[in-house]
Image (cartoon, rainbow, N blue to C red; front, side, top):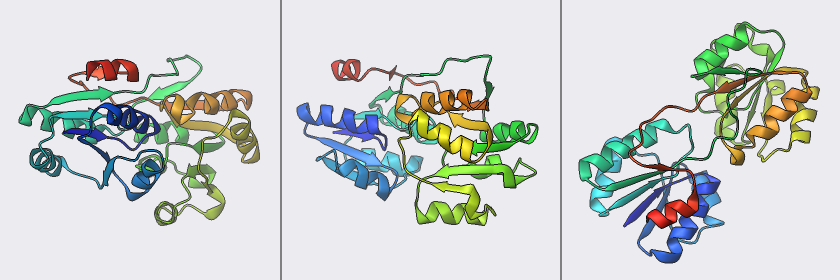
Length: 248
């Protein structure tokens, strides 16, 4: 049995490719929303729900999983670390699919290694900031900013996400609840609308439209803060879906 840890657009592509050849496949997403999106493009077995290390261990053992394909988001580091531990303890194959990096380190941009550090950098800069890192751990950025009124947060239009921002005392005018993908032109128009001087993004690859955000920021003369991907020592990692299929 093959377990695909997904929830991203490329993980669905991988699942469809694998499902053509292997029938004992289960595709896992962290949320019900992720499952609903996947079910529109993938007809195989899908489960959802966050699993800690012990829960993942028990699932793999009971379902007789012998291959884990980790195609989670580049910043879902806890899931990846747990999957690596489980694969070692159960002596099963682990393969990480990592989205290719599309933004090489550039002296024009400011790089950091955490949400907290990004918030500290914003606090030492002037002007309005557009945060495009999503709602997960957004509090770690906001808590470092003395004047939160200049922070604009772009998130998915979901009630639980909006509620979280309200609990963090973010006003409705600061919440941009929209679902992408967003073009460079759209990003530029939005940045001009909020008088953006600072863009905060993650290196989420081409699927995350990272380049479109950075190019828009360049045209708006806004400073760019890039949160680097977590560093994880994967037992086996690939960034090409064709090579992944050949490996299987």
